[in-house]
Image 1 (cartoon, each protein chain N blue to C red):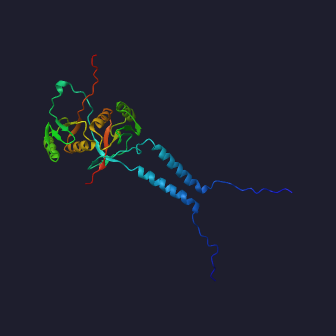
Image 2 (cartoon, each protein chain N blue to C red):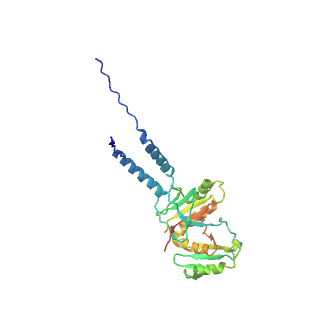
Image 3 (cartoon, rainbow over the protein chains, first blue to last red):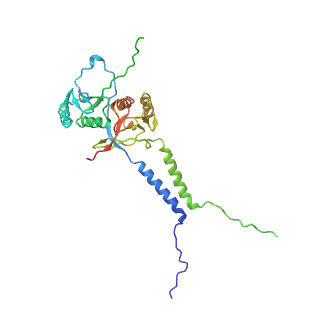
Length: 142
Length: 134
């Protein structure tokens, strides 16, 4: 004889918990989204030092950077040819101290342009160093 | 005649314990991250071939309004090198990463002294940039 099953219970989560579940899900995804890793570019810049006047003449390549132009050893070049020229100049330089490239930027150069140019120098094998103008307070006699 | 009072039990349902624990966990995770600079407004510059910046103790940021922040707290350029140095302490090379987040339109007169200060403090500089997929 077939026996019918009694007490068929429908088990479902209580509807009052839906708000809690939704809140927890929102917080979980919010935290997940905020811990996304950053991507970037490493840059090794030698520690700054004060160079005495008589030692300023070096054989290192110097780059003059403005908002619109770029010059290698005071010679203006087309930005499209810049990586090629840098690679050619750094080709024979094996020692790290010879591969130092001095970057002198005009005060108004924006960060995105500076990053573009310094990335090209580093890709060509150069080691960036910055030349900053030192600020000095001068008291004028009355 | 004495009428017995009906005693009803009011207990916290043990089923909710998991939810409570989870909410507490999230709360402390958010608190721990309150020192970061995710609330600051800046736009990263574009560059190709980027790598993962990895974990860093120190974050230096220049926002759209040209203000300088160290780990989310506003700071002056004069104090930057000293503060970065004390945060890095005697950590060995490879654990001295300083992430640098500079708004794309910031000018050299602002960001170059910052880069110099970080290198002075002995930090390994990582510029945070946006991947240029053009």
